[in-house]
Image (tube, rainbow, N blue to C red; front, side, top):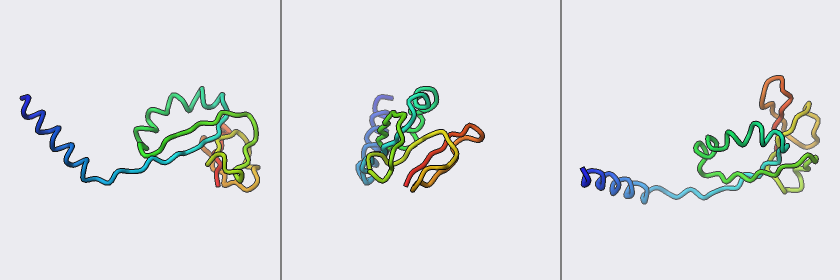
Length: 102
């Protein structure tokens, strides 16, 4: 049994060594602290499992974030689609939560 398990490990390592390594990419998200704490943080484990090539950086802030400044890639806010120079998409029906990015 030990040899069979070692063979599986060896084959897995050979397969992994032939795959191109995906470079980690940073995804910088500005988010309301209350939303991050109450909704987003409990779901981060699933996000990292589904997107292992992304390194998520959360920036908790109540302030308006100007996406043109380049400090973040996108924001998650509550509101009614009135952010200049942003592509806005609803995240949840009826709650007012919106994701916006460039």
